[in-house]
Image 1 (cartoon, rainbow, N blue to C red):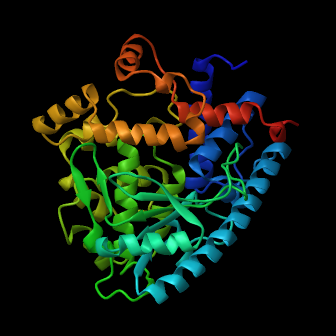
Image 2: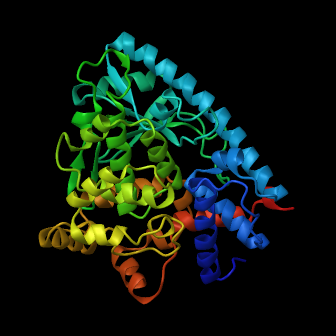
Length: 404
């Protein structure tokens, strides 16, 4: 049986903020927390959800045998999985050169290529690739030659999955989990109704057949910040993504930061920058933070000055029916947001159906299959726990690997 949800909520908040301090505030060697077995298990759940087990395995000195074993096992799984991904990227590069297709590996792949992470230090749930719109079908053909089939499409990307292999229910990472590939033609986010697009900054001006790096550190930072902004907006931020930004920031020159302002005004950048600055002290130059704050809408700027990692991530147990409302920049945005919440579009309904069909953590959950009206009534009458959070919490509470 699960502990009371209020107990789980408090435990997730306490452990998440302690983990952020241990990793982000660079305080390795801090005293081992005097946590109960439940709290250590919730710490493992938060660690898995935020993708930071390998980094903690390297940096955390908390003297707790079960905890250290869990971290070490996770790092081994991530390292084995990384080597599979690296091999797959090499095969994609070879086929893309033959097909005369330029491809940009995104986010985690690029961070590894820059040497910001060693193999085994950063989980990669999948491979993200960017291609020109006119090349997307031929890129899909390349993936089919590698044994992949298109699973579904969304406004953001096409998702390809291996024709063989099934997701493995587990806590955190597993070396044998199939590697999915997300194929993008644009780099954009809906925040929550207005779209922000940095494709022009990310795609190289003179791409070559095969795999191409980002044009600059500034281009990669633009993408990392926009991706983090989208996750903060939907309250799905991860400490791993904040760590990405903090590491890349150490290699940024003033000209790299200026690239953020080379296109449309990056009104969305302050939110992730402020969150990184809260946990990674001195990572973000004060001048950059001030400049981003000037471009940020007042409501969002005020909200972000008091936000914590817990409140904008899945460590916050309760679903928020109006999550992202503070990102609205005008009365029109608010009206559109409320209309979309009250009457989801056909596209939103299809996206939800694809999620229910393909995401392991949604399988067997009756609440998520109820009608929109019934879910809305439930939101209004009682707190509703997040299904992604409950999935990882149940995995941690039932894990034999976390038993003494």
